[in-house]
Structures are given as structure tokens and as C-alpha cells.
Image (cartoon, rainbow, N blue to C red; front, side, top):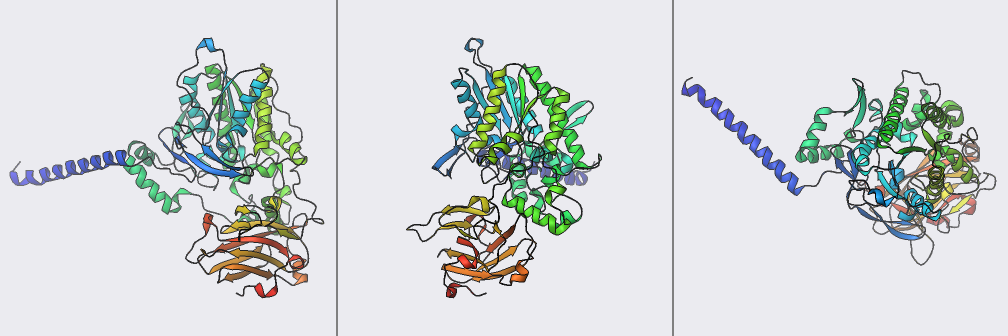
Length: 565
């Protein structure tokens, strides 16, 4: 080959080598200077095997009705004691119980001592039985990730018992590649590993195998990919209007499809059920190979247990779209019936918490926190179920299916006696408020009182005559003007504008004839308060404080406080 022909080839080789060297240098610097990307709105970090797990050593100050406390993860990114890499010496004689699950076991809404894992260990000790309890869980994990985590960290631990906490409303979506990206409750779909049956074995698969390979082997790629996901719709599901979904015969939200009966066997949902059953069998076999007893604890969704403002809104939307009550479209007991039959046929011990939760809710117990995870009372009931199973020492029948068919418990007072005006400076009125109410301050020396709202807040009120009214307070730091809209779900709406800081009052919808026709559920109407600061501000930082919401007859603010549009 002539020198003239060799020169371009040599130049190309030099360019390729230089490019590779530059990429390797950048990758080396990325591994030194950049932490693994979070990929997720929750405090989780990328994990090559599990997709993601909790941030090691994460600490966050949060608050409950008793004051502030620290939500903390251990050095492995899990809550509670660290999981050892080897079994306990035989001479110790203390059984090890490994809990495996998702955010219900993370329990960021409760203190460490209120968590089900802590309660089980303490409860067993009170009954004269020592045990070491470990918590292997992460936000947004599905059953496949839990099985992989059990294989990776459970085998070396050699637990005597494994407790899988199953949340069907999310786990069914998290387990199925065909449902990936279809629900806003499943944010980790772009990076989570799935287990798919191929050649007689469950094999790890990802939605995008090439990108999955690249993010596992390149910190630089992972960081760049995370930035793309954060600025595009690729990292989350598209929101769908509930009324539009209902009109085409679907459930109002994708995650509620699990409660819709009569779905064809070829449907994505049925395939997700089949995948979930296969994963539960594999987890049972894994525990048997380790010599560990397995208990599956099934946690129902909040809507199955108690009527909430969200339930009322969905019911109103169902009546508007289909002229049917939501209970005529969705079967709130369907997942428990299917799971109970599956567990009985497979010989898997289980405890279904739907019945105990509904029973406690009917007594007035608060089972769920505002984020729809378990409140302390929910953890107590779950812990009692696990302790009872552990002390039995022998396998026995699955959980009772009592209270199925009874429907969710009523948490709201009868609409005829419900307050027409919510004084939010004196009381939280949690039973009347849904999502979007960020933090509460009682009336006192501070100028601000009531609830701080974000960009969208849900409330329910009894259907009464009179002008619908809102009273609130805008802080001096707000970016004015604030543009707002108050909307009766399925009914009329009105816009308002706030141009100055300080107190304000606003009245809406004064036509009694129209008001009597507002769509309602059990005598309650659902309201959406949508707000935005100038320049697109607001969001989770809050927009303004709402001190009162209700009907004009109870409004104490003078008329000249009303803010014109």
C-alpha cells in the first residue's frame, strides 16, 4: 500500500484512539467526581442489579403531629439495622426475620419505632421470643426487584423467616413490562429490571437493553441520561383525564384497573397478574431453598379501606362520565379474592389486611397517612398479624377473607350534619381535604394560619345553598400576580387573580338553581383549587395560605376584601 493510502487510515486510527482515550478519561473523572444519579423523585440512587435502592446514609427531617423527627436510611440504603453478609453463629440461637417490600416498609411517614419491623421485634420480645428483624425495601420496588434483592442479600443472611409485604395496586404495574410507563405511580419503569420467563428460567430484562447496559457500565452515560429524563417526558407516564378514561370504559386511573372486573384474558392486566403469580411462586421457591418460612402480607390501597376526598372525586367523575357510581364500575375486593385463591392453591401462607383495616377504620382509627402510606395504627395492625403468624410456628391457612363485600368505611360525617364552613386556622379538617395541601399552621400570633397550598388542591364540602367562598392570606414573598381557579368537579368553575400580598376573600357561584344541580357523591361535592404564581412558580413550595373554605353564610370576612379578577 502506498504511503498516500496509508496516511488516511493512520489518521483515522489515531482519531479513534484519541476519541476512546478521551471518553475513558471522562469516564474516569465522572466516577471520581460524580455520584451515581438518583433517577427518581424519591430518595433512591441507581443500583446496577436492582435498578435503584435507597440513598446510603440518607437523612431527612420530617414532622408529624408530635413534632419533628429524622427519617434515616442506613449505610446500605435501607431502613433499620444493616443487613449482615453472613448468617449468625449457630450458638446465638436468635432467629432472623427478613422483611422485603417497597415504600410501605420504608414508612417515611412514621418514626422508626412505629414501623412494622420495629413493632414486630419489640412485640416478640414482650412475648418472650427474641428475634432480629431486618428491612430489605426501597421506594417503588416491584416483586421482581424484591426477589433479586432477596437473592443478593437474603441468601448470605440465611434468614429463618421472610415476610413479603405486597401492595397489589402498585406491584402489578411494577411487575409487568407491558404496563411500563402507563401509570404515574410507577416512576421507576425506565430503569427497573424485570424478570421474564425465557427458556424455562426467569431472566432479567429491561425496557431498553442498550441503555440499561450503558448505564450499568458508564457513570458518564448514567448522569447524562438522568438529565435527559429530568427534562423530558421520557421519565414519566402521560397524565390522562379520568373522565375521558371512564367514557371509553376504562378505570379513572391506570392503577385502578386492578379493581375493574371482567377483563379479557389477553388484556395487559391479566398478563400482569400471571407475571405476578409467577414471581410469587419463584419467591416461595427461593425461601424454601434457603430453609426460611415465607409469609406474604397483602396491604390494600387507601381507597379500598376508607372513603376519602379522592374517592368522592372519582365517584363524581364516574357519575358524570358513565351515570354510574364508582362502586358499580370497580370491585374494591377483587385483588384480595384473587390473591386468596392463589395462595390457597399454592400453599403460600398469607395475611390479607383488608378486613382488619376496614374493621379498625369503622371504629374511627386512622389507618393511612396523608401520603396514602400506612399511619402508625396501620403498622400496628400489620405487626400484630406477623407476630401471630410467627408465634404459631406451624403453617396454617391463609388470612381470613372476612369483611369482603362490605365496601370502604365511611370517614366523613353525614352530609346533612357536615360543616358548611371549614375553619382551617382552627382545625386541620383532614377528612375533608385530599392531595395538594402542603403544611398546616394553627391560628395564633403568626400572620399565616391554615393550610399552605401548592398548584392543585382537592377538598370536599356538603352540597348546600349559598355562595362558595374562600378566605386566605398571601405572603409578601409570593411572586405576584397569583392566578387561580376554583372548580366544582363535573360542574362550573371560576377564575380569580391576586395582585397584592395580605389577606383576601373571594366568593363564587351564587345561582341557587345551578348550585342544586352540581354533581355530588353522598351529598358531597368535590372542589379543585388550582393556583400559580407569576413566572410559573408555586409547585411544592406552596402558593398561599387558605384559612377558610365553605359557603358564604359562615364567611366572616367583609365584602370589600374580595379580590376582583
